[in-house]
Amino acid sequence: MSALEDLRVEGAARPGARRTELAAFLRARRAEVSPGDVGLPPGVRRRTPGLRREEVAMLAGVGVTWYTWLEQGRPINASAQVLDAISRTLGLAAAEREHLYHLAEAAPLRPPRLADGIPAAARDVLHALSYPAVLINGRLDIIDYNTAHEDLFWDWHTMPCIHKNLLWCVITEPQARRRFVNYDSEVPFLVARLRAGYGAHVGDPEWEENISRLGRLSPEFQRLWSRHEVAQPERRVRVFRHPAVGELRLVAIELAVGGHPDLRIMASSPDDEETRDRLSRTRGIAARAGFTREVPPTSATHL
Image (cartoon, rainbow, N blue to C red; front, side, top):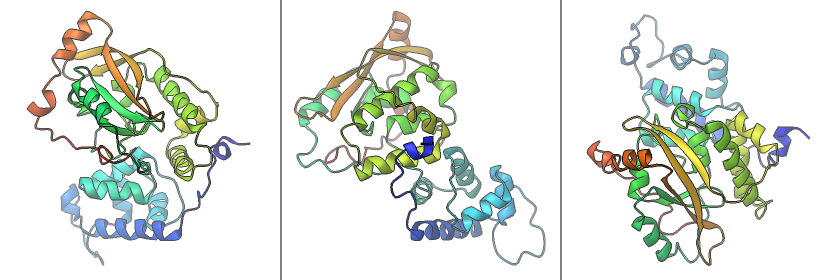
């Protein structure tokens, strides 16, 4: 069985309506961008408003044929980096970029609703912690996070984050390898944690679709997933290169939420005194930068 087949791509052939909508959306946005908006001369003999397909392809750094196929609604895959390049070229706002990602199936499905809601005690503990912490489920969806986590990672993404998932946020972010110093050891561990959680959800359409989407988006994930490695929670030292305070060595642990086996708090504490001092200097940095907290859409009623 090939690695792609091993991703259990059920329903990989999506309804044609999604691709048709993607094609129409790209054409409409392209028509709204003038050559002058992107530093190109106006030219002559333009039969339609906006940029030409070959101009979008050139500015985004992709092949003209590939971009034409994308606008024609053909079933081709687009990486996060390519979609970001197209978003920048077309000047897409955050809501438009999120729409593009969903139409291109380059974003996770929203987590399913939790009938009893998120335990208030779990959220209270999360927000009482002075160190960075997130509330996650077995799929690594970010259910909620505290202020210290926001201060540490508020500028992680080169474009607005739409993923709300730990693994997606790492694998699809172009600058992740530069910022995540031990990326090559920690990303395989995260994939192995996802595989362990998957064991209880084999055949679940939402799990299967999220895994297949990430596999189509990232050959790196596809390769790691094909290893069939699983891992249980353990103490991990993760090293991040923070643009304002320098290198941070953080010990990551997972805390189970009683009565909710699919929920846990992932908290990070300093591994040394130098990190403790540097981490303290990140506090309040998001607010000082004018960052407005985006409450995760699942923070009150979903898992």
